[in-house]
Image (cartoon, rainbow, N blue to C red):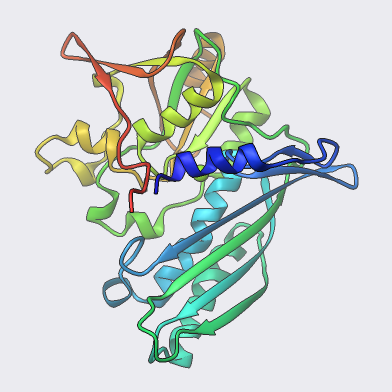
Length: 304
Ligand SMILES: [Mg+2]
């Protein structure tokens, strides 16, 4: 099954009241008009053996990561988190101490971002050999800043990314990253950011989501891609930065003059890389050692 094709299929089924559902499936969060406020809603899950290793990382780190991933989706829309609920499917032999550790991971991460854990459900696999699974749903709000969608990138816009990319799996960074909520609020509140997404699937995969939603293409420059130290030892560190994913940095577009102003002042708590330009057409190319090569997204379809 291909995740993107499935989302497209869901979008074709949906009939929403546009007065309530401003943005439906296919962005980082849904946007709902409720009581005069724009609410954001997102859900995500982590699986033992896919997104973390219970044996290696422990239950608290798994809980923390599951909360942080959904918080990162709120950041991708420049929203403010309000509250979260969580469900846990516990493997056979799971102890009260393990369940408490997950709770603490969830709650500690939520508290850091003003997002209390207000409910949930714990089920056990019993005799079936199911893995630990944690699902987190977060309700957020626009809080005075118009939610930034994936669909607003314009030809001529500059493409920027926060932080450094690649090799997150080599360390605990994929567990302990900071959801960029404060930085996203500054970006969307003070600059004319036209599109934004958080990097979970990898720079190329997630940029592809912006390009598809905005009906545009992109040109990236090799030397401009910020490569994380975690990827320095790899055979091809640039390849790691382009495709690894799990960085949970912000990838965004804005007019060139706004990018100049952003780079001059950088009011964020993290570095910013200016990595390329939005162009007419579709797909993306990388200017690599002076040669232009096509970049195809991969790894983002979650083939099963
Ligand atoms: Mg996302």
